[in-house]
Amino acid sequence: MPSHDFFRTFTPLLSPDSGAEGGSSAATLILGYGNPDREDDGVAWHLLDRLARRLDSAGEGMEDETTRSFGPITLHFSLQLTPEMAEWVAQFHRVLFIDAHTGAEPNDLTWKPLTAHFQKSPFTHHMTPATLLSITESLYGSRPEAVLVAVRGYAFGFHRGLSDQTLNLADQAEQKIWEWL
Image (cartoon, rainbow, N blue to C red; front, side, top):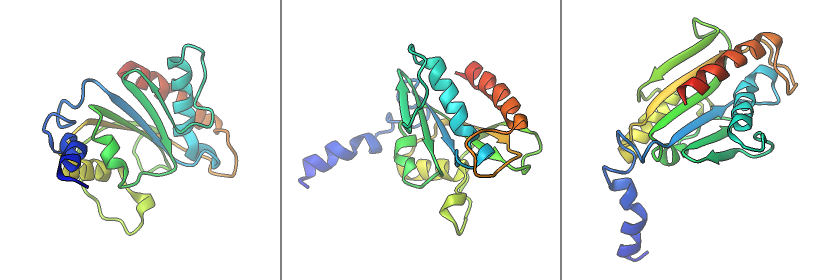
């Protein structure tokens, strides 16, 4: 790769104006993760689908798409967080993570501001949002405002729906996310 191509490709990553505190305009990423085929573990997908229906003028949800953008708001669903997401996360001013929890959080519905904090794990599927933020900051100098919404899951069988308890919490989470937007 000629040197001028290298710098054209990577200048946004090296520039202090490209995602570090203040980010690129007011771009917001809502990043949900979990397994929608394991009942409540898929609460993030259900919430993203609801938000897409509210944001889409035709009222269409996520369907089979993993990413939908509505102006400055991008919705993305993944089965798990991966280190490769850091480059993408660095492009946003705000990031809201959505995940299910099994009781590890003190409240059934948790809204928690996040900071970058690297946590070692022998398994990549245990990557935390704070670790992804740490990688984003280390590699790209970006520190987006970040929040975790953790919704209590009660049922984790092989089914695409949500339990009644988690469905009720998803209603509350949707409203809180909508107010945050």
